[in-house]
Image 1: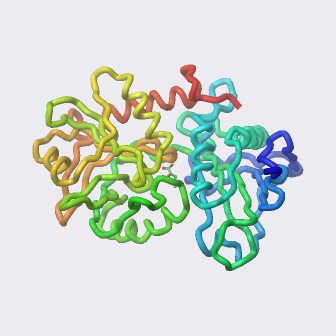
Image 2: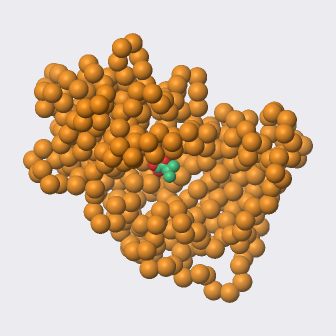
Image 3: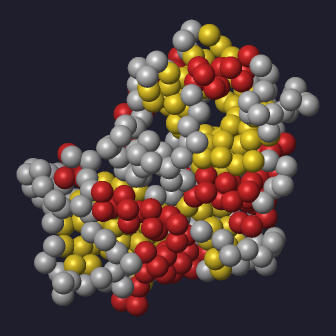
Length: 374
Ligand code: COI
């Protein structure tokens, strides 16, 4: 088309003066509140294509108040993590998957396409510039937030003609700093996260804003997260939990130990942690792994009544795994075992094993193609 593609070889680096800002004491980090010294910033316009990527000191954005990201949610983002290994080297976890997902999210909104490996190269350069701010401690990492926004200064509703892709970095600690605390879910039948033909399978900000009111109403009733249901016939599919994919380990009706999660489709965000858990669990010989719908009444509540539920957990980049110990549905609270053999456990045996296998790969303790050296 003659337009410039996103090109990491054109990268310009403008460094902040002086020494890098020291990391705060690691135990004071709160998810997403601390940012590194630099950011990546790449502009695009419909006539020229992608401009040269720039790494610059972290700063506020200046955009026109009519920018359509602010009015019509022409905005998408992704989330991934980089880890420092015992030798002080930085490793990204499956960054090609996240860059590819940002591309798919962008395409859904008419935001510009790019070569996803060029984006990964730019992010590697950003991590190198801010390498001293990547924490080196088990459970800690650098959360990477690429974001694409439409910036054209017009209130017209139309395809983006000017956009900005930026990446910011946030040093983060374990989601559960004092050990795993199971969460309580409200399976509400009114609010719906995603629907066929919608954007539930893309990481667009517009999927997240509308979840905050139901989540706040749930919190007032004593639930920490929503269990997102999708109505079908007189039953409901169990789709996602909070901002995470949902996994259920149970003895199925055939008596097999089975790990189930919803199949990918319009209702489900294609999580990188989700995909990794499926692939790791497929290598465990004592469980069957299935991507298939689970219905609230005919499958899940029946399994609860027959005491066949072994573990329920959410899976995502931020918390990795998030065990569940109670689900409220239709005015009734159903206790969920976290670990059937240990009533006081904060995390069940399968979630714990998966978390350890993931961490071993992420921190480079075992060699694996999912861990990319920066
Ligand atoms: C996750 O990693 O689970 C997320 O969806 C990120 C969240 C902060 C939006």
